[in-house]
Length: 228
Image (tube, rainbow, N blue to C red):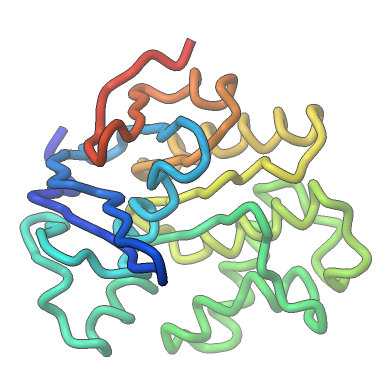
């Protein structure tokens, strides 16, 4: 497998009124196409910070993230937004769905933002919603869906454009054990079906154990670890 992502010399810190907090201190890391990776560890060590930088939602203080050799932080804002829309899918603990819209309309959003026709966006959204088990919930508004169904809509929205990489931040953090297991299984099935790279930040060691690699952040650096 080729390297999809290469991280080189990544630094990130935050300034508070009291002190400067160094979160990432020269991270070097490679992620291959189709690979599954879990990032585990206690709160506050920089897991979500790393994910947000990997997803280009935040910028490092120093260092590079190369996607297939391209330093994406050299892109202008318009090109970076286009890259993010087409290349990366996001799923968060809090689904961030638009409550006034249906499951179908929420899932169509990334395709409409890309500039796809409404018919094309609808067709792609229907296909992925059926795949995640929501065939009978297409027209339901967000307020009428259960927690497990909401996270499936969020997953469908993230995957509607068939991104190369899916980034998930505590994707089952608000779900009960049954729904968590179903979402775990679904994410891994879709990883294989769509040949996408998967990075999951999680406190759930059972989910982490399903991934091909597991890392944590120790003193600002990524360290390979065991998820068992």
